[in-house]
Image (cartoon, rainbow, N blue to C red; front, side):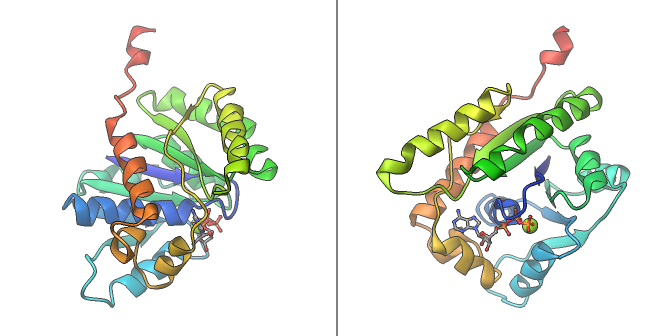
Length: 222
Ligand SMILES: Nc1ncnc2c1ncn2[C@@H]1O[C@H](COP(=O)(O)OP(=O)(O)OP(=O)(O)O)[C@@H](O)[C@H]1O
Ligand SMILES: [Mg+2]
């Protein structure tokens, strides 16, 4: 199973989500997980390096791949239960290549105008890639949400913008919580730092929502 956490917007929470999902599958589901870091800044590779120096944390493999990565991803996918690809907008070629083979594409967006402005272009890219990868399940997920009750409208509006482009939006969101940043610093995840905490609950909800999604067979009837 290949999960791409991608998107063009910097700082939307791609690496954070990819890392927490990797821990969820490796630690909570006992799966064999490979992370693929497509970011030349090596955010996820550095996180893995820190992580793998701490013997108390479940070790996870990570490799860096850039550019035309389609065939590499396909062959790696045969050797792991989960391949989780962290890919931003800097490597547009890798982003398209990963979209052309992934089972799930998850695009994090903050409920902010700058992030939402990327939705039309992402929809365009998803539609193109779906032609070669019709089984792909694409979703937006709203991240770093403000927790004040009077800001709830912003979250709802962000979801509306995404759905207006005909793309699934996960029910689960992440709220703005320091534990995401703090856990990353230690090569850890919110699931390990505070397993009963609110951030862990939101990560598990997102992972479970993804796993409950049915394979997209709609192309078979077209
Ligand atoms: N829900 C959240 N609450 C608080 N902080 C968060 C949350 N999600 C991510 N962060 C923090 O926001 C910062 C940016 O997140 P992250 O690095 O995951 O974004 P990114 O999309 O991978 O960025 P880039 O485009 O640079 O690769 C990090 O410091 C991360 O720890
Ligand atoms: Mg990143």
